[in-house]
Image (tube, rainbow, N blue to C red; front, side, top):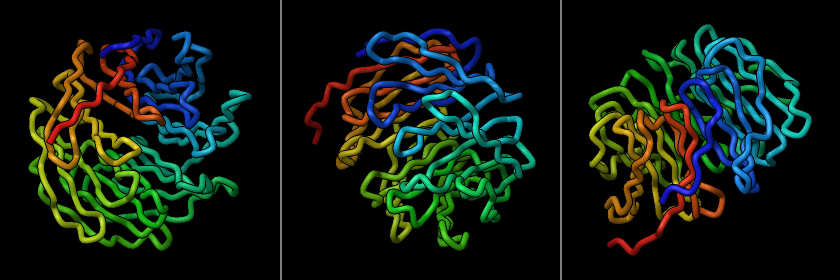
Length: 297
């Protein structure tokens, strides 16, 4: 059920995320800004400006004190959430930064780029500690594992790769999608990786073995975003078909469909208490949804 619609961006909303305390939402956009929203009032508290291009990705640090943004201007920026100031600009990629992910301890951040590489950055020293090479086309989505030992990446080369987060070695290459991979996510227990694709499907993989588990089908267009609930029971997907689907992981069944966006759904995220989902779309809006959990076998 739609709870609120947040309006203010002047172009596609590319990424949305809840603050760790669940009080705020951050959204990034092709309008080159990040907006911080107060969930209770629905008001935009402030906008962060500085990037010279679209911002495909925004993330909160685990402690909620820092915001990170990756941009078409090929830079990764770190912002102090309270002071609203940019305190670091990380440069090294030679093309758009499409996806970013903090390590669980908040000391490092990884970035995936259209230059086909991932980079791992040490935040304290503001330096790139490793460049991960292996994908043969642009890297569109990345994620740190919950234990911080590995990083997953999804690429337009149709593969999902698992990397050692310490030495940068590629541990596994997962193949099966028939088209570009647009989105990936780890379950909170680290046992499952989900990947959404231009082939309209979501695939679930066993993290340890790399074994394909199952395909979730129902969307009628590309799946650009995927998110797990923190209890590892539910998964949400956002699609270019303008809908959000909520799935029971165990059964693989879709038990709820949210409709309301008038254009592509580009990003989704669960609230920390799993009771709400936030979505951002090409219709320039951020939308907040209430999840009605159902027993689906």
